[in-house]
Image (cartoon, rainbow, N blue to C red; front, side, top):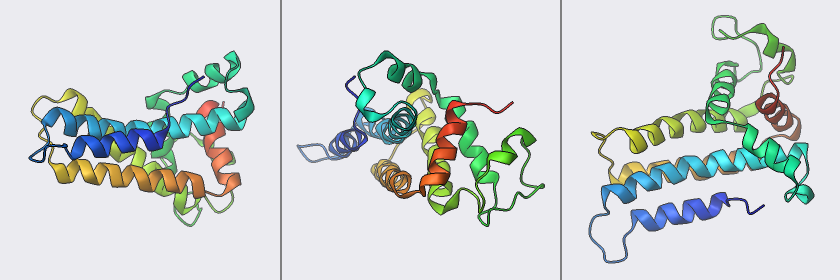
Length: 180
């Protein structure tokens, strides 16, 4: 399986933001750059989940593709919204936590940590921007908006890579499996 490399998606986004002939980039290019910024994070998370469950050495196997393709944008966003509702201190704040208690036993001691909290916030933000860029005809993108989306994506990728192993594995497990 030829996986999408998140860094390549971001490289492409930066090329779209800076046209070779100078001048202002086209709206289509700026919109595509924002979309790429989101998809870089999405594919990084999905790859990490499939690598964790099936193993990187099995990327050409149908079971790897099954896991990779089973994760959708809505489930990633829902999980990220859940992570954002957990206090940074790791405490489960009943006022903030308006989610089913079925997830609570799986929250790592001490919470998901600052890296996964930042990743979660970035996913939600970038997905909203991607929806605007891809579907709202009245949305006007500035070069600085596109550059900010790429920077947010770069930070999110770094945060995913630096997240604590236990918290990252719990996050990925909750992404693949819904507690009952």
